Length: 472
Image (cartoon, rainbow, N blue to C red; front, side):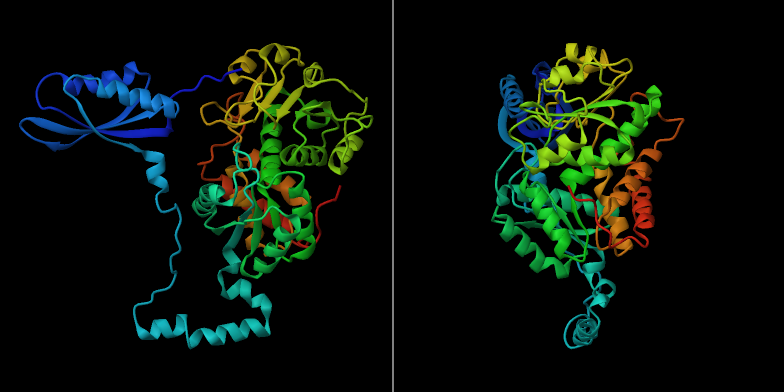
């Protein structure tokens, strides 16, 4: 399966050209881009003379090869001289995307004396006498460490800590943009579980929460479990719990559209890694009763000989009838398909075998488990992880608000009840008037999302901050 792509701003380029001041060259530039399949988003004359013009043409492409084809087409226009091509995405990342700023003025000696020595010593001694004051008197009250080992970055795989840094910077920027939280990228040059746990434990005093990010399964399960036991601040693995919150919220609304209940649907889940396991746990906690989970070997069931601890837990809590076939067989008659696995593993014909008014969440990104266009021919509601289709399931809908609520409540752990509360609040942002097959989850820019999720988590945290999630 190949998902048709359209020009995207993520492959946006600016081409600097010199063209004759007279003639048809200027009018031919837009035509050249469009004939190559690109989209012109801006055309700016930067220098004008009697003989020549210098023009910056900004356009969107499908990928890097397509961008080069557009450049070649522009270069072929008669009279055009190519000067420079800039990749706007790389320009955005030059020098990094985040920075530290002082919240207090440092204009005079008096201000310096209070913010730093000698005045700061009094604050330090107050915290030494009462460590809980660190949440009141330092950035700890509003700070999160975004921790990765670079082992499972986006869909890129094990690319290491340095290559993961742009992603972690982006995560930190999203924390600030959507929840006003100061987040810091912590990229660890180790993939040893013991070392990761020791390092995070050692740096934890400076943070109000830990966001684990892009750590591969099954190591991520142990890292999270051990850190929850060791630390007095919440530990949240976004690949697991953020995904689970968004899936449950979207599924809640999708079932409202088709008139079905969580407790009455049959769910097929593709993916038994970190995200799949977390989605499964939250669906079960929310009341889903009939689930079959498949990995690359087929259905997970108690008769399989390759079960590790995580797969065994899945087998013990799902697939009551002991189905042992493949994914295609598992989706037959299912009300819901949720994919957090691999691209192109199902076809539209497979979706056609599902129950009437089926719901399909094909969340592998950028290429989903089934073509969204093919799925829409047979399913009542379709969601993806992509921004170019309706119903995008995006973790930024969850994690900023979750951590805003956790920090405001000064919670020490993340509980299952908090995750459920966050999912319910996220689903409720979509009103009855707005709800429909193409709008089951709000936009990441909806002004009410982070606040609603934060309020739900904060309320759930009251009196429960030291009760952890159920272990496998």
